[in-house]
Length: 403
Image (cartoon, rainbow, N blue to C red):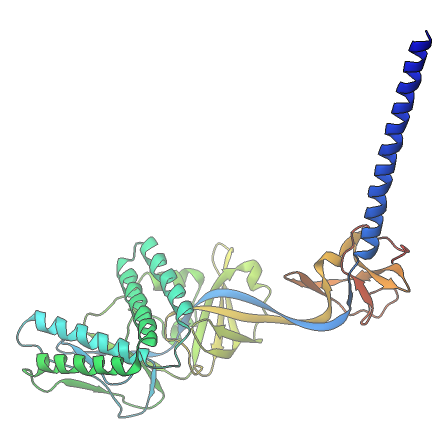
């Protein structure tokens, strides 16, 4: 019996020691956690900041354009760079007559096209090639996905142009110029058998000359936006007609419109007749007035129509434009998102005040990434400029002592 009693005593002692060890371990963990929480509260001074709310869209440009048509459909030599602002009387392009068959005409056209690409590559004011490439690739895939193979081929040609520009930037400039001279000699040999070319001149100043046409020139004039609806825009997009004899086009440098398809909910965030800063992703920036908002018959789509009195310098002449619109600029106190918490249905943060955590109410105006902007309020209990915000609200309560 003594042996059994000794065994029970030893067993109870062992259990007691295990419990003590577990309690000590838990106390150690709790102490570490309390210490970690006490020292881990980073602080950030409450400062007034401004943030601009920006919306991204894909818009369609409406402006007056005039297509230049050739009477002989021969190889084209462009006499000014694509996108050049022209004056009255400027020679824009020459079209050569081909009396010997299509082969030489097509060869000459291909040589002229390569010359134009290389000359554009030597210009240093082009849009960053990565951005242009990505957007043109998006256009190509969108067109192919929608079954518009012709538009897809046009976009593929744009991809080749972008890569040509990029490759020329990496080459020796002198070598590129030698290549251009060689190509010009080859093309002159091809066209020497023809009569004088048909040359096109600008009838007046105030135009941009574009080498490219997209079949919408007669459809997307400035007058077309007057009664435009979301359904009407889709009808226009389905009605393009590319001309085989198009040499290029003159684009008005004056007033233009931007039609932006969006949801009715998003459209309601904009104010009619207000002015917004619009940035074209492919170059150009303009202050544009929201002149009209049109809703679809179903009521679930809308069209924002913006107006500017002048085409901005550097604006890409493409029809579809990825755009960013600065909708709203707000001012307030910048607060880390991790510092926010909800208590009794209200937003709140904690500040460090004389080593003690104190709660401050906040009214969130907008969020941006890992921060937000809260309204500047002067009532008692609201966050004020200069107070030290605790960057995290985790395990914090009003009156907690801070190390």
